[in-house]
Amino acid sequence: MLGAGAILVGPGIIQRERRSSLGPARRQRRVGAGCGDGQHRGAEDQAGVQGGVEERGGGRYQLEIKIPETYPFNPPKVRFITKIWHPNISSVTGAICLDILKDQWAAAMTLRTVLLSLQALLAAAEPDDPQDAVVANQYKQNPEMFKQTARLWAHVYAGAPVSSPEYTKKIENLCAMGFDRNAVIVALSSKSWDVETATELLLSN
Image (cartoon, rainbow, N blue to C red; front, side, top):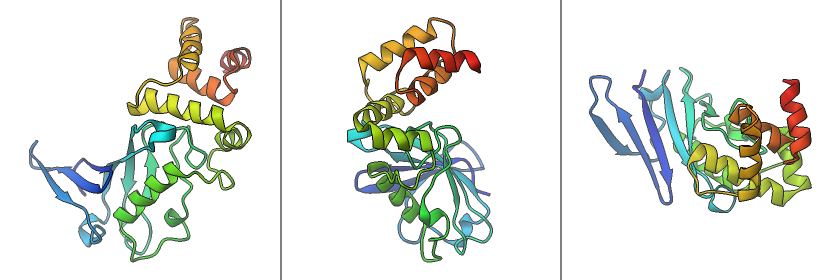
C-alpha cells in the first residue's frame, strides 16, 4: 500500500508526489508511460487535476484513486473528492462516467492515460452520456447558466477566482436564513438559481 500522496497535473507536466511511510519527508518523480508498474497494485492514492479555464477558472480538483490487485488488466477506481459541477461527474458522490474507467480499459493504459483523459473530459463534457442528469440537462438547456454554475462551484470548492456576483449574493441570502452553505449551493444549482424553488427544496429536506 502506498503512502498518502498526490498527482499534480498542470499544463505540459504530470508530476507525482508521495509522502514516505517512514516519515514526513517527501519525494517527487515524473510520471511517464511506465506509471502503471506492479508496485502500484492494491494501492490507494490521491491525485489532482486542473480544470479548464473557460468553465472552471483553472481550479484544482482532488481525486481518489484505488488501484486493484488485478491492475493493469483492470482499470483503477477513480472519483472526484473535490465537488464539481459537470455532466459526467456526480455532484454528490464524485463518481465519473468515463469509458476507459469501464469497458474501454486496456492493459497498455496507465495512470497518466487516466489523468490526461480526465483533463480532456473537464474541457469537453459529454452530456448525452451523463453521470449527473440534472447537470447534463442544464448543460443542454441553458449553456450560459451551466458555465456560470460550474465557475461558481470551481470558486467555492476548487480555489478558482471569484465567479458570478449575482449567484454569490443568492447563496449569501439563503445562508443568512440559517441553511447549510453546501446545501444552498446544491439547491440553487439544481433549481436554475431560482431562490423560491431552491428554498422549497431546502425546507423539504
